[in-house]
Every structure is written in C-alpha cells, then in structure tokens.
Length: 260
Image 1: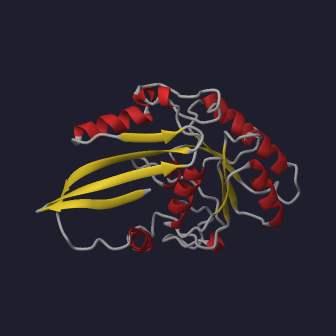
Image 2 (image 1 turned 120 degrees about the vertical axis):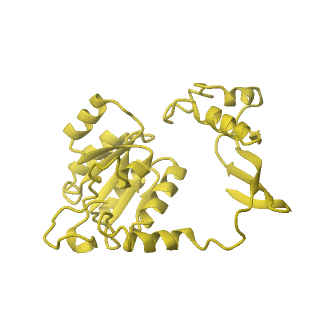
Image 3 (image 1 turned 180 degrees about the horizontal axis):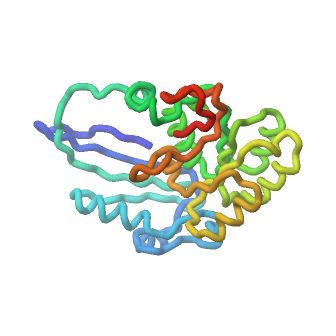
C-alpha cells in the first residue's frame, strides 16, 4: 500500500493512494464487471473467498461522493493495482505522531479499566488471506499482544506442535482443510486439545455458529476482526481467554475473566 502527497496548493493537498497485490489478477474482459454490485469474478477460482460482491461498488460510490475515481490496472496471473487521487483540506501542519504508540498509551491509560492489555499472552492467528492476517496482527498489537500467524492449515498444525498457545483465532474457511477439520486435529492432539479455539468468519447464521460450538470451539466471532476487541452499545466485551497472570487490567485483582 502506498500513500503520498503529489501536489499541495495553499491549504489543500492532493493525495495519491495505491494498493497493489500479487494475486491472481483480473482478466481484461472482466475489469468493467469489477464495480458491479453483487458481482463475483472468476467464481470457480475464488470459491473459498468470502464476501457478497459489494466491496468495490461501495468504494467506487464513496470516492465519487468525494470527487474522485477508482482506477485499476491488472495483469491476469500476476496481480492488480488499485489507485485514486483525493483532494483534501489541510486542517493543521502539526505532525500527528505515531498512531500505534499513541494507541498503546491510550489503552494503558484512559481505557485500562475496560480493555485488556496482555503483552505476555501467546496468541496464534490462522487465516488463508495474508491481508486479514496483517489486520489481525496489527490490531492485537494495540492491546500489547504480539501474535504469531499462519496462512495455511499445514503451518498452523506445524506451529502448534512446537508451541503451546493461550488461544487460537482460526478462520473458518481455509484452503484445503477447513476450520472444522483443523479444530478436530487440534482436539485429537494431546499438546493442543486444551487450547481454546475461537472461529473468525464472515458467516452470519446461527446454524454454523451452533455447529462450531458443538465441534469444540470456545467462541464464534464474526468478521470484521475488530468486533473481537470492541464493545457494542454497552454490551460486555468479548473474552480473549488470556491467563490472568499474563494480562493487566484496571479491575479487581480477584477477577479471573479478562475482557478486551
């Protein structure tokens, strides 16, 4: 991902934003269909990828509302580049500082009574999508958690053979073995059967959730990932299952359940 200032005129700055990937790319004849609502391209090849086909359409409309346009360059089999230019007013020229550092201070300070800060927790995140892994890894870091990651079922099982985790966040739809098969293998291994497993998925149906919990998952968290670490209209925070002696929380020392 690239973000840079291209032109500055008075109190306005023209920003250039580009996202590149090295994925399967897009056929030239399919490019126009990229921006249609509920359209999924190359469905046979992308059968394991979750989504409704609305993302690109929503992004396009949002950019149009801001006077911009999403551009696309792609080579099928090599990858794609999405980019746009956006004119923004400069409110202040004062440096904003480092976002991650400021968030860590805020979590340890003002929100220490509500948010878990668990720098010693051992967490493994398993997801076949590298971008999802990066989002999860960076978000957990804000709570002091330096997570290990695995982008395949094979890597997940290999890592767990070598290290014991406090919790595993497992994507339900993995290539090859799906989340249920991975969970079954974890439960059949003496080293990993007691590790709490939380499914992460975009699925939103009670039947899948019931199946996941019956299979032995500790919890079922719907994507986007940040719902795992935030509250909703005053409801309780989701449990992270970090041992009490590895977390810091601004509540009674007798509390045995830690919440983010």
